[in-house]
View 1: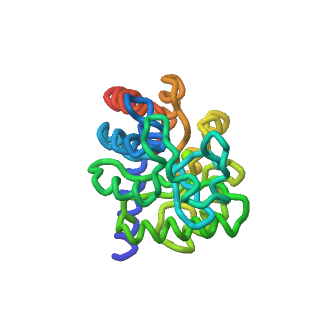
View 2: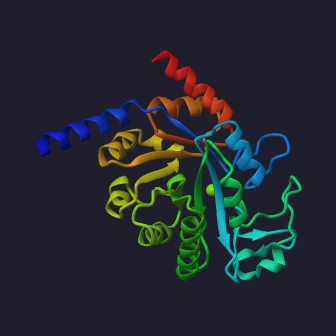
Length: 259
Ligand code: MG
């Protein structure tokens, strides 16, 4: 009886994966819109307004331990290396939309007001494993404190970061961003998904099925042209990360209506 129930549950999950609609993640928030900027709190709120399934952001940690939301390792006209700076040295830097550089804490507080989107937290490369592990522990700790664990997922180009996330929270959803590991290797390390550049799936379209057979979720970045968006939707990826979330949603709708 128990075996049969497990079999039925597995089949239902398989059918759900097969028929699930592709979801959209706004890359660095929805920034290609009036008044917004990459990795700004405005971009997060705009991603929520257009009901993007997820809103991605980039995280780095200062020397004195403050987590900030920024893509590049350096910031400002003087190209200050964030991991070597104290927060006081960079806290007044403005984004292109006039917003002040957000801390992760401020970003998460704003996120608590969001009704639709979830956070896709990219923890960026720092110069040493120790720094990356310290930053990762601090991010996971903050997620726990803010009680938003069910609405966040983690991504990183660095296996050391993905591994540390799972060490801190074995139930976390973690996807690896580079194709230096194969889907099977990602699965072995306990990751729940892959998040590869879409050209990888153009070269190896069979990896989508391979990932699904392994029980891995498939995300791809950063898909912006109509042609590439259509291609990824037709390939059956689970998630598309894009700078044009509204257009991606339109094309998914179009594809679904023709099914
Ligand atoms: Mg990113």
